[in-house]
Length: 259
Image (cartoon, rainbow, N blue to C red; front, side, top):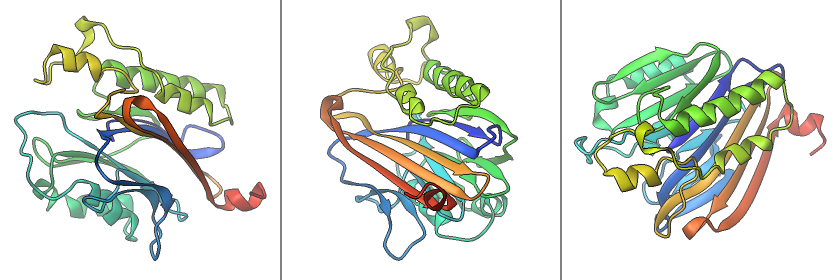
């Protein structure tokens, strides 16, 4: 993924609400949001490397990964999407899994990783060096730099989620509109990541529209204090053409609402 915001233990109904956009080449083969056969994972799937960018389980686990935008970072290494699927298919707590992963994190392509379980949450990055930290309750945002780095689009999506959480709103769908924002940041607020001014402008909006590269999916995950769960994914094709929308309810949520 390239843009994430999440509210952790701040909402009366939802233990975790996470929204994010996956930006990728449109030609990269991908499976849409689904329950993986023979696995607890509920996620989209990268059919090229086999992992995923964002997923959850009915047991209340969730994980998401972004890459790191650094032209000087190595491009070899193990696919970062596997750090998500490896966690979701296991049983270790978020904290224990993060501490174990520290030993091998440098062997993966540069990543930022968020891990959640029913009790705790962790952030783990491997660039420039592996580092891990526990996450306190609150609203946070992540793009292709360290957690809560104040890039314009991370600030905007964080503010939108914070306003939603402050209202105590129980309607999740407006959060997807936050991910559809195509406003380009002013030049004086752009980061300098070495890709050039024109590309920095293009990548500064929450939703990236492009013929060959752009936002492929907007996803929402909500995990309730009562063990409920819902994931919604909106897919997009070249030039931002709207594609398939998928919603999966799981756990106590689907039973309580009769869906």
